[in-house]
Image (cartoon, rainbow, N blue to C red; front, side, top):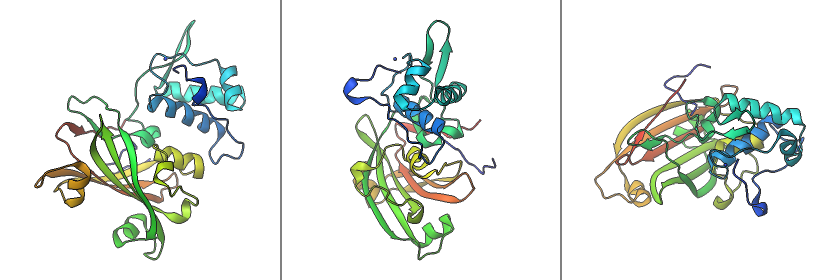
Length: 265
């Protein structure tokens, strides 16, 4: 897959009242094993299933997901190869605690900012607004669409330990994501996973341009900065599995306590 300065980016015992497992439909846009992988990885990456947790057996998982045992086995094999899970004799399948942020398969959860010592940090996304409008010139050029095309715009923040450190503006062709949630509170935190599950759109490559800029009034308000101040600006174009530009995004971040990491293997 060609990239140009690109990145792709205890199963803890869940409380009975809020199981992270949802049964999968035969009508899902993605293959069923991808749906199983998505739910397991999402539960791990969002901290609902913690490192060291032993997963239920394949038969129990298959019953929970409403799929065949072979489907679960394929998902577990993939997640083991990718580092999220490990197999232990006499114990079973265990959550490792490693986050494979270097893998294109996990671009959907990749967070660009790490601690100053290089450690991965956990962030919380909060959507500020969702709208559908005609594409601006820069959006049309990046997405290779006609300027008269409608785009869905999403503005969200990223928080670490309760402090907003980044805000993101996403633009996607509205025609490809019919019925996308218009209520900010209903937009899933893992956007790329949602695109895969609901629309069969897999983000397979990303082109980025990184620069430093002076903060503007929006940065001041959202990030709580005192002007003048500098921010890291990341301009991103994400491509689907067919190489079609699918997402145009601008990320603006503070880096006083974090550093930008972009790792590919």
